[in-house]
Image (cartoon, rainbow, N blue to C red; front, side, top):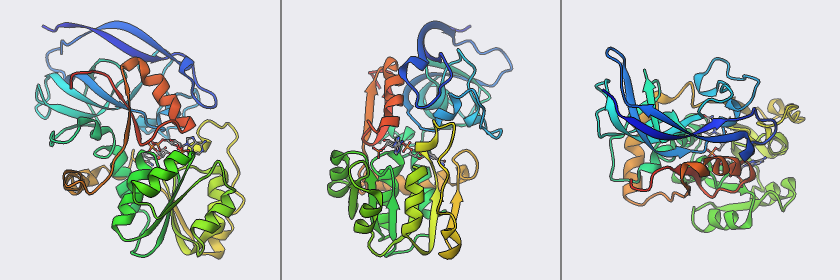
Length: 348
Ligand SMILES: NC(=O)c1ccc[n+]([C@@H]2O[C@H](COP(=O)([O-])OP(=O)(O)OC[C@H]3O[C@@H](n4cnc5c(N)ncnc54)[C@H](OP(=O)(O)O)[C@@H]3O)[C@@H](O)[C@H]2O)c1
């Protein structure tokens, strides 16, 4: 029989319009049993870390924009928020997930989760690195940066790569991956502190504060001969301006558009005509569909880089499940430096 666990949870209180606020969430104490009925395939998890991923914003809207992708479907009001996390297996009826092992994948924003027929859950193979890395550099975030640079951008040595949201989880990795390919890498972000970090700790060749400088002037200054690859994470006016600075035969890898997620009326891009005049390739990609098969290859590539200190990685770790709403809403105001993560338990 199962044991009963007191279980703190974060629920969706109200559907979000615009940027999410802490008031859209509610903390609740409930009880969850570890009992797994005979014949069902399930894992009972003690959650340790949660990722604050911008894509969760889609799931907080009343309008479902998921296109039938599970990871983007709107939550029901009053349901527990779900997202990427790291957890320890307490009980399992699935041979791939052994009791006592660590896993990462989609879990609830709660202390304990019972997951039946898990679709996105991986056993953690290497535990000599911080477990929190599996909601960042060694998880979906790292794979996104890797796939965006290696598979979506056709990047070549010597090319100019521009990264928006450069000091965030995907951004700081994509920039460093492009540097490893001997590109000239520039980034933008919202504070001078983060600009300093990009230039002096993360190895970017140049960076600017998009809140302080005119975008067009800044891009002219940092990429005087134009941009070969734009790794897009912002959308709106940023994308519109970047198109004007792209070189002929440039590539735009469309990974995210965080400035647009909360807008009912999206910004209408004016400069798309130049995709024709400059023969620019612009293509979107999504973690939810086309790249999980690359994960084992990515993991084996990234692990030695981390062990040999060949990559700089920053996390912004908030403590306690109750801090999750503030940590998550903070990313929509650029409050995070590096990947925003919530640590649920103190002892792992
Ligand atoms: N396609 C995929 O499969 C996939 C997978 C993962 C992530 N993504 C996308 O990648 C991007 C980064 O994700 P992440 O997890 O690494 O998050 P993150 O960059 O660590 O955090 C989000 C950052 O976005 C910036 N931001 C927030 N609101 C903004 C606005 N209105 N205008 C401009 N910048 C804004 C802030 O940085 P500043 O301080 O620089 O403004 C903030 O720190 C997001 O767009 C996300 O949706 C896509």
